[in-house]
Length: 115
Length: 234
Ligand code: SF4
Ligand code: SF4
Ligand code: FES
Image 1: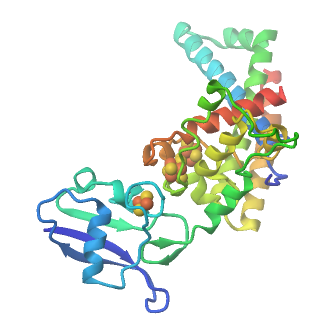
Image 2: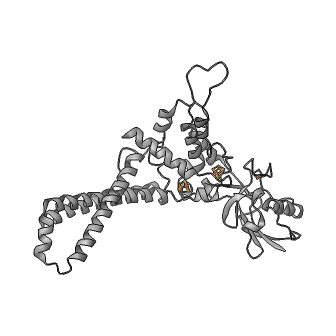
Image 3: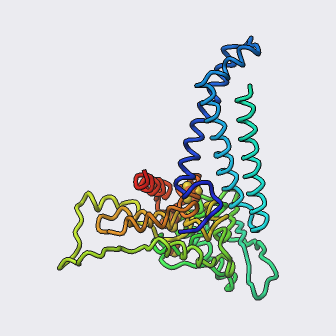
């Protein structure tokens, strides 16, 4: 057993699962958005706002946003442990990435729910 | 004439490694790479490489042949040489002791971690622990590994984390004992693999499968381990 305290979840398995599930959610969200924009090329602000004030759309968006944060964190954490061999460099990188993900997530929530 | 370019390094004489070219007359025969090395040894007695069985059984002569890991003794020139040029380097990622000889310590350490032996605390039967033919069949494609290290040293995840990622060879053996009906330590074995590195650093690139000279499939075994971990945890 290799010990690690900076990874996302409790174990390698949970990280792996979160990575897969979040990828599916992000994929579904991306397909939905692209399809929606292709079907509604003449979209106006009212329609856009109506879409995002719909509760199921809000849940879907929030889910995608949280997935994005988790997915990025797990991916970048993994990259940092592959390529950044110096402890201090790796730690600072992980902290910066973690902080950024946190900020983006909160900011994203504010944007989505404020619309 | 075949031009053979070989990685040379003698730690006591050379400041750093270099590539040395040799000319070899193969007599128009489709020799094995190991035969070529043996011919070169008559030109340069100092050339160092490992070999023993010369028939793909012992796993000693794993090396990087024209960019691909393989066993020199069972790799015919016709399968690897282009434009009469053969480039031989030691297996990547592990420290070089001399020329084509690498230090396999890290590789064996990872192998040791998976406890590659049968664990069973139930009283031993009078003669032997029996397996049904179906149970025995589960070990096919796993027990044949000769620990040549061609796979692990071709795996980028092993290159970056040789101390934390067990690597395809070790994981193939981990599954060999997880899949063995006579082994009773499944739970302990799985518990030791659940961290983010030991198994989960595998990204399924399948370099290991491409190079294995015994035609084994470590990626598939890793998938089985992952499924066992998933079943255990959900
Ligand atoms: S799995 Fe194949 S390549 Fe890897 S050590 Fe075993 S025999 Fe060699
Ligand atoms: S499939 Fe996994 S173990 Fe095999 S080479 Fe790729 S990362 Fe390494
Ligand atoms: S010399 Fe034994 S495997 Fe090649």
